[in-house]
Each structure stands twice: as structure tokens, then as C-alpha cells.
Amino acid sequence: MERTFVMIKPDGVQRGLIANVIGAIEEKGYKLVGLKLLQLTSDKAAEHYIEHKGKPFYDSLLAYITSGPVVAMAWEGPDAVKGIRTLMGATNPLEAAPGSIRGRYALSIGKNIVHGSDSVQSAEREIGLYFSPKELVGYDRGTDKWL
Ligand code: IDP
Ligand code: MG
Image (cartoon, rainbow, N blue to C red; front, side, top):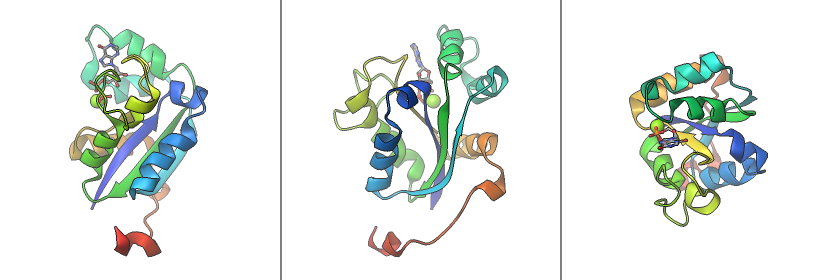
């Protein structure tokens, strides 16, 4: 069983896609174990995207991700990191599979609706950036045995 971090970026919130993004992940079968709406500070955004510091798109990425509220989530399931990346689609919506979240809702790489951890290690780091251990809720669902 794995946990991963997902964020609905400011464009997803502004465009009214919160329910669609959550619905896509929930319908697939993953379990929501942490959820909050928040406005990122520049410091938090820099910490989140530390791996991209110095890249040409870094400044615009920080401006974008702090431009409005975001929804931060932790999701659980077998191979959740890879599975949710697949569900999100490629970083560039032009290359994202048509049924994926980015394939369905996004037009450009600079406004691609969602973030998802790219490895188990990043997932652990990113969940820790946004949630304290007691804000994560593990529970059983009656449907777990059908997945
Ligand atoms: P990911 O979100 O699919 O993991 P990363 O390579 O980690 O993709 O990039 C982080 C975010 O930075 C992307 O989701 C996108 O919002 C933004 N980004 C990445 N590459 C570019 C670019 O070339 N131009 C503008 N924004 C970019
Ligand atoms: Mg990434």
C-alpha cells in the first residue's frame, strides 16, 4: 500500500474543477486520507518546487502556484504514486492521454491543473510538507476488498 501527494493547482480551483479532479481519483478506487484548501506562501512554494530552482520556468512556476488557493491531498492505494501520475497524464497537456486529467482539462504546460508526486520518496517529503501525521486519517472502506 502506498500514499501519494496530489495538489489541485490555482487554475483547477478557479475553473471549478475541484470535484472533477477528486472524482477522477476517487472513482478509480484510491482512498482520500488527507485534504485541505490553502494559499501557498512564496516560501512554501519554493520548498515544494526546490528541485526546479534555477530552471527557466522556475519564476513563472512560483508565480503560478501562489496565484490563488490550492487543494492539497494525500491519497492511498496500491502503487498510488505511479497510478495517480498515469491518471493525471503527461506534464505537457499536448502529450497527455485524452482521458487523463490533464488530457481532459488543460491546454498548456504552464497551467496543467494538478500536481502529483513522482516517486515514493517525493511523496513522503511532499505529504510531510503539507500534513502533520495527525491530519492523515487511515480507515477501512467496505469496498476495499473489491479493488
Ligand atoms: P510534473 O508536474 O508532471 O511532475 P515537473 O517536470 O515536475 O512536472 O514540473 C513541475 C511543474 O512545472 C509542471 O507541472 C508545470 O506546471 C511546470 N513546468 C514544467 N515544465 C515547464 C515548462 O517548460 N514551462 C512552463 N512550466 C513548466
Ligand atoms: Mg514533478
